[in-house]
Length: 483
Image (cartoon, rainbow, N blue to C red; front, side, top):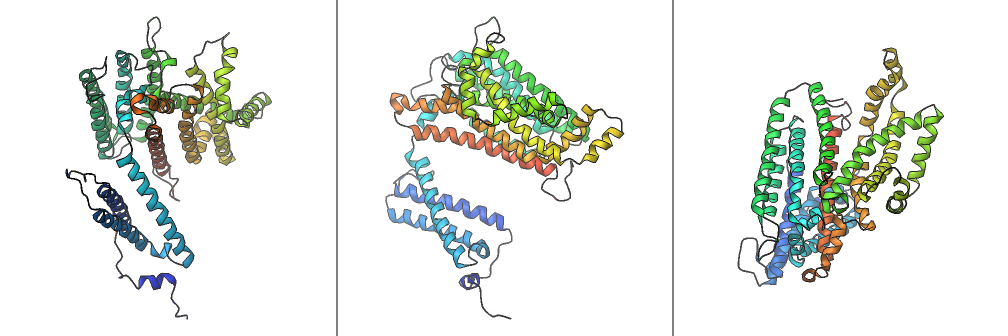
């Protein structure tokens, strides 16, 4: 038996044998303290006020001490995972280099976000970033969105309330969102006053009403469905899906009613347009993907050949090329039948592009379903359509759920490409804002803010995906509650 010690054993001699009970909690605390120490050290070095302390510090030595404390937090992280990060000399060198890179990255980000950046360009133009420049050219047109906001509040509260989870998982984050929304809606656009056509008192009353409707719908649905049977919850979710489609149709009607001068789709913009495009493309693309997936697997050439041709042709070209086709060539093709505006054409291309990729994802899931499932369904007297929709497709969706959500996240991020066509989505607005004379050259602030919004939505979708995977038993070998 060898008496030689490993490299980690030599390092551990410098420390005690203390091992925390909850390593994850200690990791989070150490990461949080690293952020606080870096922020405080930079604030002191730059002679800024520290949190609620009104008087700035002048000593760079004190700031350097806080920076050293942040390095101590990094060292504690290394100690917690010393047997993974310092188990040999190569990992020791790699860990030190990675810690150095991460520290400098955090220091640069914190320095820019909290001390160097001028976020007034975002605060002053927040309505333009949300709705676009044309939508906000006349402030009274914002009233057309409030029916949609109320309906979306009912839908959001009902969906979360029927999931059967603890109320705090919805109430705490939504309350934070509500407070931020109230602050953003009631504060003056500029220090000297509000812009014309903007009465924040009316906005506040309408916003509070929408928040109340969301809270009420959540509490009611949570009360009735927290102990309901699974088939009752599934039926309620089906009704909510239909309700969501109705909301989308009503939104188009509210914004641009026939026979009345409203806000045409060509005037939509900002993050609102990105959400509209992604939501419509996800719903329509899912239907297109299911049809193409079954069509490609069909034994009838009349279905398989066109489906294969559509999938291969669409997937062979980049999305940017198809968007330019929708913007330049598609009007000549659709005009004799349908005078589609550029937003509708963009939705059509995004739906088709997403549907083709989704078809290939579902095709892999369909091939993974055992043949005995279809044979058993047919032996029970189910038709081919019933077998595919009730037996085969649910199993295929279950096994491919991570890839489906990844496709949805990619589609959400792909909506940012429409700014290349001159459509004033959030990224196009962010590129235009620094052209204002008081904010000339502030491109990093505007682009970073919009990029963070896209990242937050993508991260939220990924967390939803993890929750669905857990409920479907995809993370446990023995299955889950809904398997």
